[in-house]
Length: 70
Image (tube, rainbow, N blue to C red):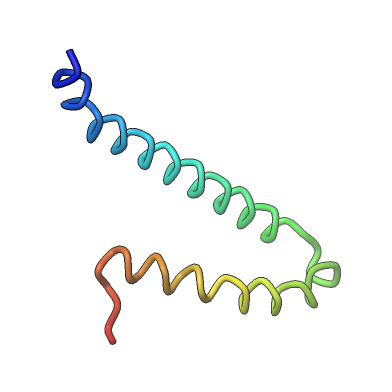
């Protein structure tokens, strides 16, 4: 039965990756919603930090998606 269980591993990996992707997307959308609702004067200083911090994440996602223009 080892052969049969191995044949499902790629499917399980795809499902796990898909679930993690969906979780990250939900988290980022929730964060964006909170940022949009927050009073500007309370988050002004944090916005620069958030923008600077998220740039490497965007670069990693772009590379993974094959959109890196280097």
